[in-house]
Length: 439
Ligand code: NAD
Image (tube, rainbow, N blue to C red; front, side, top):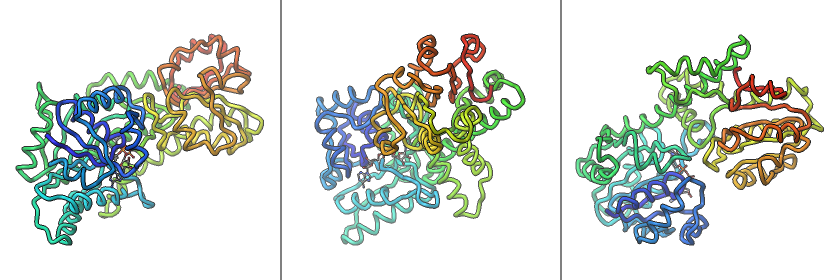
């Protein structure tokens, strides 16, 4: 099949590449000429494990192309995926301007049946808005052409995006047009050889499913963070509690890890957008409002511990920081807790030297103007003479460091661990003062 993907970011590029991998011909469009130039030159604008090889393989096979030319991309595919950003507006609701611009572009150039598939995360009712935008633009052209709008939210996780796309737990397809449903079934057949993965539903339910999934995961995280803070006060160990409850199959182990709060491009904005959607329709989503407030507070939890140790004024202190990305295996710095932590430490007068295995370039782009923040080339680099080590992202490389070298490099053996990476008793036995989350 010939497929167009509009928006070549994390979701668009992974979607386009994986669809090409199974034999389709895919044209990826983006409005960012630098991004397209990088892709055309054989580079990858984002870090996603395995993506570079897969892109190169499919480009070489002639199945994957990149363009900034809207007319060319619209002409290419009968199926047009919209995978552009839906960032939060000032009131927290999703900004649909990119989605609607993409829809109008399709309508401006189409000359036959198109299935417009919304892969971006969008509020309930967006399918109708996309449909109206297409109808209006077609009317302006005096054209009467057939089209269908489908909601096909994406559930991939950054850092494991290819695996998630190639072996999905489920494929949600919201549509009411039989021809479009049939095309979507054919498109996704290679991704579900052993089990039927497609869940067909109406467009509105599909749109809400995506928000419901992210809101549920964010809720689990905030719930555990609040419980962790309580466990600390009560003298309990949240890691033991986590195992104690996770073993119940009704609860399970996933997304129960206490830490410094959730971040990234999805949970914060999707929780906000769902709360805003609720308000718009006269519903106060009390649980989610609390989930967000708890998360905002949790991002400062590690700094609170530092302040308890060193006092409110951190002038003259220098801290080593491991991990900048919002989670391991990505360079994504959007809403990363590290940004709040660095901001607060440096606002209090401290200097910070940070290291991250892949996100340093992105971090420099978003935080490089902070004169009190510097970056180190390797993980031991920030430690020399630092007052303490703070761990913010649970990269594998930080799991079992050379603790003798860490102890020798730091001014004093003091670790603030925002991801509960180490065994407290053992580390304390090694002479470290160790502050973790909820234990
Ligand atoms: P992104 O910012 O990485 O990519 C979006 C791309 O769209 C950018 O490259 C931008 O230049 C391009 N763009 C904007 N307007 C355009 C237009 N009119 N025509 C062509 N290109 C245009 O965003 P992302 O992380 O890929 O997220 C895209 C959507 O998918 C969002 O709604 C997001 O919530 C959702 N989503 C993201 C993830 C994730 O892990 N990143 C997972 C699931 C769903």
